[in-house]
Image (tube, rainbow, N blue to C red; front, side, top):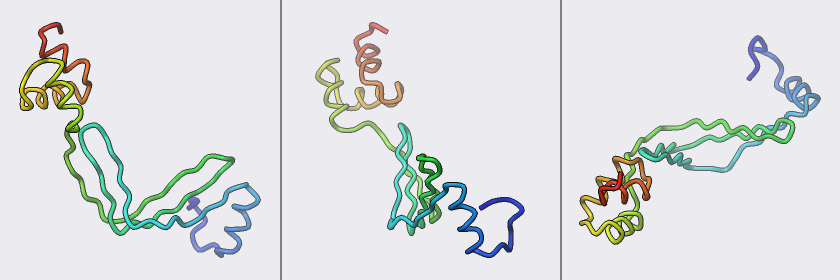
Length: 113
């Protein structure tokens, strides 16, 4: 955890961490999902540790990574279809091009962009 402390007694390390106000705990998790606009990262067989230092939590996640492409939701596509009066294929393409920004997709499809 700390550079240069390799081989240190775990109890001594816990004592030092406690004195510094650092608490760590294992989080019961089998899977962790990180969702972005264009991709989703899934960590299977996850081992998660939460480190609380002065009221701020930091999570360390280890496991097997799986990456998925994500696209616009059906609700977003339907909204663009209705607002821009286009088919689902055009609505989805405009949403992807505009990184999920519904307003920008509608404006582009209506020719106002």
